[in-house]
Length: 206
Image (cartoon, rainbow, N blue to C red; front, top):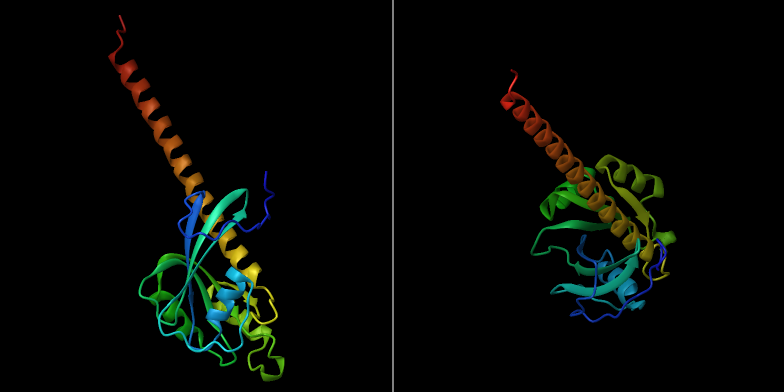
């Protein structure tokens, strides 16, 4: 049995159907923020400093164990994705983006119930830093998001970002299931009370 935090990597075959859940994750952010490097570091544990701007769309599949479940991740990365998603990793780098602009971008590429994590990438470039960790955290708090500083080059917080997003998704799924279970239980009780009331009304009182 896998432990709750076991993240052993499963076969990378995109056609593999042996999983409990499949999540589609979308990485968005302006050009040159490091989306491709971040994706390749997580999926392949590789880093190339010579990446050019992505013309098409980056796509990787990775299957992991999380919370005793086999979870298949379809991960897409592009500045302007062609679809909306319910799970996002949002990047910024060096140049500060005002909350209203970032909130607009999140709204554009996500549904209302999206689970989102904000990432300040390339934290290894400390000499070129413009955004402090405090400013990044403040921005995340204003948007109601969790925040990580990360580096694909030095492999800082890359795995942690994906793990946390998967955990958040699973938590929300469990909350929805619990709510549905509670609603069904209430409906059954109401139906039972209604049947009992009808039975008493129809009984003879002589």
